[in-house]
Amino acid sequence: MQAATARHVSYLRRAAGITCRLAAHAAHVTTGSSLARAVRPIPITLVTVGKGSSKGAELMSEEWADKLKRYASLTQTQIKPNPKNAKETAVAVQHEGERVLKALQPSDHVVLLDERGRDLSSEDLAKLLAQASDQSWPSVVFCIGGPFGHAPAVRARGNDTIRLSKMVLNHQVAKVVLLEQLYRAWTILRGEPYHH
Image 1 (cartoon, rainbow, N blue to C red):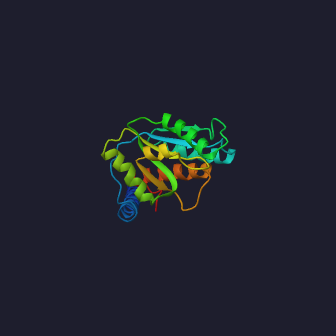
Image 2 (spheres, rainbow, N blue to C red; image 1 turned 120 degrees about the horizontal axis):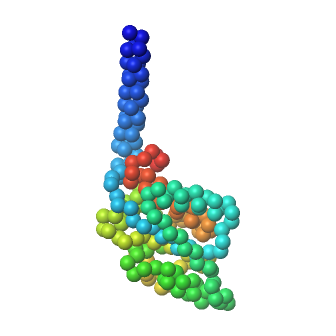
Image 3 (cartoon, helix red, strand yellow; image 1 turned 120 degrees about the vertical axis):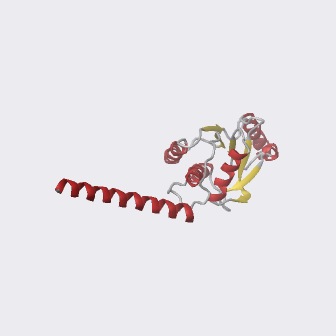
């Protein structure tokens, strides 16, 4: 009799736990993540113009990159600023742009990060990734410019321009923020409780 009662209590506890988890998930989906749906992972490339990162920034970037790779493949390319040591800023930016363009494929959907770009919420970024899946884009490339911004040729190649902030961000900070937001966007699409 005691064994039957213990099994019954154990069953009720498990059922209560499952019910609580399902209710929490349903509440999250209805309030925080109405965007949750099946999305085909699209390869993501991050092209950054900048010098080597500080150890702290690099550790944070690696942490968010590893988390992001649970959802989509990620390739990172770093372009040296002013690769030909030009004296004039415009010429330096042009040379950076040439290197950035070499890193791109004709089929890439290119998103430039620039303080003059359009504002996106985390949900909007999730919608952009969902759009990439829906429209079968081969890949999405996010470009972070150098200290003097993107070259005109890179701006012409960009399909979209967004900003992470109205403030100008150091490329290391922008990279960390972008990687975290890409991870967050994927958790929104998957209906996972990271974003609330």
